[in-house]
Image (cartoon, rainbow, N blue to C red; front, top):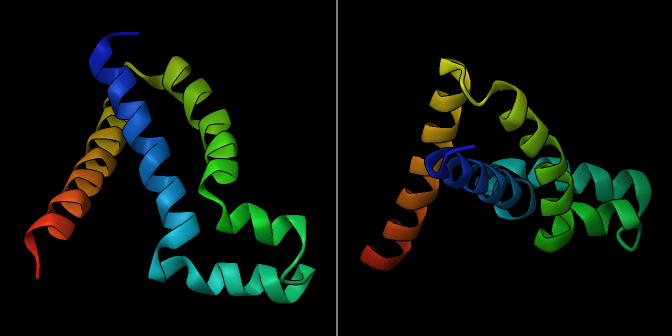
Length: 96
C-alpha cells in the first residue's frame, strides 16, 4: 500500500471518528444511543469516546483500503474526507 493511500486511510479514520464522536450533525445519533441504551452504557461510551470509536472505524476502513485502495471511488472518498479533516484544522486555527 503506497504512502498516500496510508495517509488517506488515516484521514478517513480520523474524520469519520470525529464525525461520530463530536460533530453536531451526529448529535442526534449520540442522543438516540443515550436514550436507547442509557447514558452510562458501553454503547454511549463508544459513540462519545474518540479512542474507542476509532478502533471500530479503522477495523472497517483498513480492510476496505486493502481491497479497494486502487479504485477511483475509494480514492475520491479518501481525498474528500482528508480535505474535510484539513479544512477543520485550518478553520479552527484561522477563525476567530
